[in-house]
Amino acid sequence: MKGIKKQHLPEKCCAACGRPFSWRKKWERVWDEVKYCSDRCRMVAGKARAG
Image 1 (cartoon, one colour):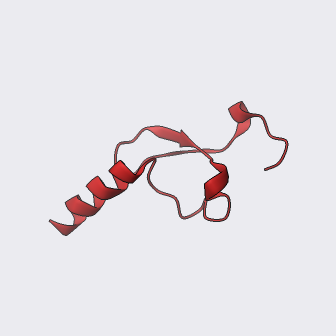
Image 2: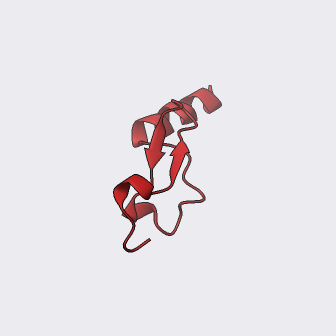
């Protein structure tokens, strides 16, 4: 991912809220597994699944 401009980073849609979010350096190794744009969306999705 080195040398790529921000406007050309890969994007996904959040599984909880549906908003698009961009690739982040901290997700570099797990980008294929990332489903949610934030911890809040991850928790909301977990509560919906559990209850």
